[in-house]
Structures are given as structure tokens and as C-alpha cells.
Amino acid sequence: MSNKPKRRFRRNEDGRLRLVAGTMNGVEYYVGAYTGECSGCACDCGDGYPCSHGAGGCDECGYTGKRVRHFPVAFDPSETERMHAMERSAP
Ligand SMILES: [Zn+2]
Ligand SMILES: [Zn+2]
Image 1 (cartoon, protein in one colour):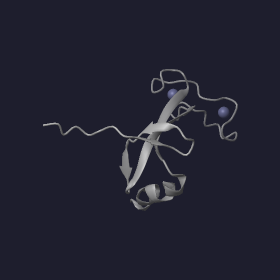
Image 2 (tube, helix red, strand yellow):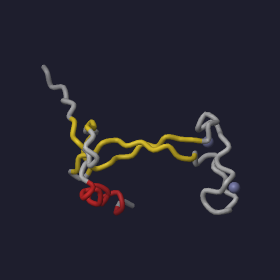
Image 3 (tube, helix red, strand yellow):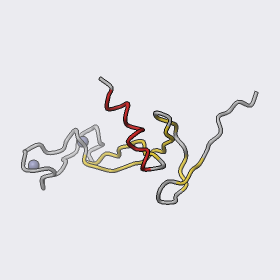
């Protein structure tokens, strides 16, 4: 039985080949990554966001103060809205 799901690649809006990670609401997406401040140890002094104190580090982020977030990105930006439509209406 060779019923393995085949890996498919598609170009995103930047012309880069990305692995198709799945579909959401019928829209194909790839996984994008973004490095941001760790929410577990980010300063919450209310001095504007982000304030100059930054994130101090905690065991969630391995004391780096930074966390990589992964999120689905639609190949066609015009479909982004449709991809997230259900998320928003979810309770
Ligand atoms: Zn602060
Ligand atoms: Zn942290």
C-alpha cells in the first residue's frame, strides 16, 4: 500500500517555494515563523508596548526573552481573510 500523502510545494506571494502544510477553510497555507518577545516574561509596566525593558527571560523561552511563533500563512494574500473567517466566528 503506497498511500503516503505527497509533499507539495507552492510559491507564495514572494515567489518562494513553500511546503503546503495543510488547508484551512479550503485555503492552502504554509507555516510562517516570527521571532518575538516571550509573552511569559515580557515587561508589563504599562510604559507603552514594547517598553525599553524588554523580556527578561523565563523557563518558557529558555531565558532568551525571545520566542519563535509559528502561524499559518495563505499562499494567496487575498485568501487570508477567508482562511481566518472561521477562527473569528468560533466561540
Ligand atoms: Zn517595562
Ligand atoms: Zn520568557
